[in-house]
Length: 339
Image 1 (tube, helix red, strand yellow):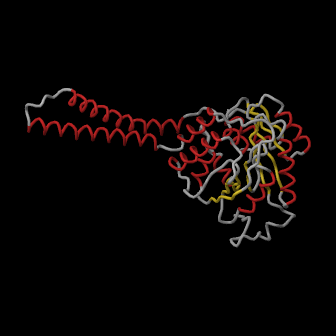
Image 2 (tube, helix red, strand yellow):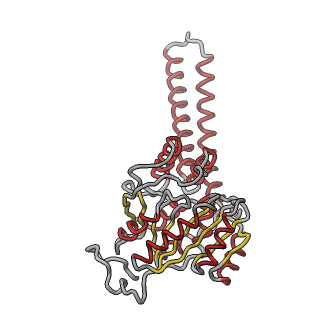
Image 3 (spheres, rainbow, N blue to C red):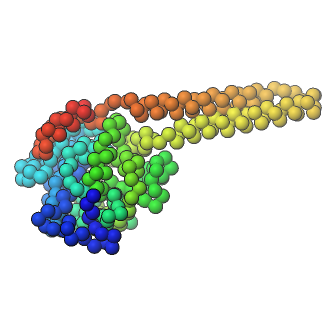
């Protein structure tokens, strides 16, 4: 396996050879970004060339109905290393990223946004942080340039990931990241309908690091993320864990146990004092026992159904309407597999 840097954080001389530069594939999900995507691509390309990297861009239009894909076509006409993927409708940011990942060919794969908040000037920091002991580099933002509710939603999602997935406690994930090419190839093997890129990364490697970068203001428009989008993202996280179903089973067992203790208490009380009237309390105990047992078995059934659902559900991750550039053969296969 090739290495970007040696363990002492110096560039490997063999890989720094300009005759055979490291290729960086930049995947950008696009949503109503006709006014910014051109600037993002050109500035990022300049940064990569200046640092001595080869490059390609895969721009995935996630159902935008403005001129976003027309702008992507223009970028391809200017530079054949720009690949455009036009999805049939809005499938969500992570599905759009997955569509782009299936077209990359680089040694390293970078994910960034289309709105200039994950600024091209910061991308080299991620590349510098990649070492021979690292598979994934996540950017962190000490100074977030987002609305309070968006930050709150992001923090809740990060907390949910820590509880429900195998995310290392010391790692803070983000959508501005760099991964090795073989990692990108591995996570694209996932063909389930509910895509969560970070969750897939946590499945395949724990060799991750964080690097702080500057977060910029949006240059045009407002965030495409709404409360509905954040709820959908959080619900997608649940597809990468059986913890909620197991929690339901535990709750059922606890309720059932409390009910049995209550029944035992009432029985002892009845024996020691036969004059005590048994009515509302005994009824509630009976209901608690029964409901606890029911929830327990529902949790167990849910465990099996959840596993079955995650295995056999074949709803499409996305549907490609049009592709410009790239490898035609692999694109045709991709269209066949993911429609």
